Length: 98
Image: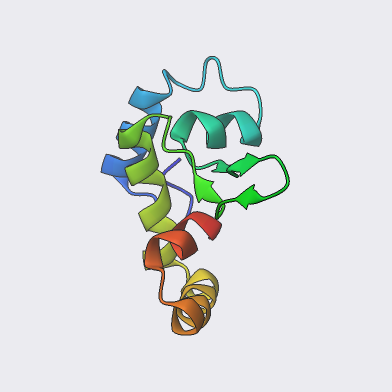
């Protein structure tokens, strides 16, 4: 895992420990959901509609370990991050998107 740009020994250890070596993870979507980074929408009928948010129902340690390396160490994602933050100012929302 440390061969991935931005993933260091500590991040790799946290990810491996919290996912039990990816033993039960079968897909990207399952990993996203397990980390609590999946998007949920609040809807009630046709008149009540809330903003989409991340669910945060997953593993908080895994969520914390996964979203920071992409932004800190990848120039491609830094550019996307800065462009979207300058547009709406919501850093956490952009971290999840990246």
